[in-house]
Image (cartoon, rainbow, N blue to C red; front, top):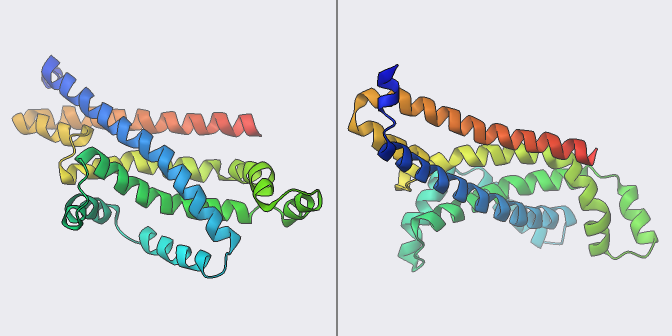
Length: 217
């Protein structure tokens, strides 16, 4: 048992906590941006604007069928070739946001499709514009239905931050690898702690989802 705790010297623990901060930072910013852009893209697809909605939907389908790691590599390694240089943190955020927005857009589109058409007709009959109808009537109902799949997708987002170790972002998984590279006896302790931390982060998100579900019921 003492061998287990030997891995967590003050230096190693501080180093891992720094990685946790980066993981949470990337996740939090990506969640907010993904919800924003995913909602916009989902609404555009739902509105069936001639040509534009089909074009956006096609692009969205392409993105959803690409590996996230490929998008991360493209953002970090290929964009500089086009003159766009992003720090590693923001390259990761951009890649995560780009991919997760596509996934969430499909959830938003499906949620809007699930709202009864009578809600649209009733709102328009009462003089509300299309935008007012969407903002005040349709979206609140749709998001109630979307909370479980959205939270599930956001949990995937948190877990997927570990893929950024492929471009040497010093997040939690990458720093864990650095710690146990010092001593192979640290492999199991570090992996156990990483497992527990990721579980707690994602379990926390699921509890928030249940709270929202009850609040909006």
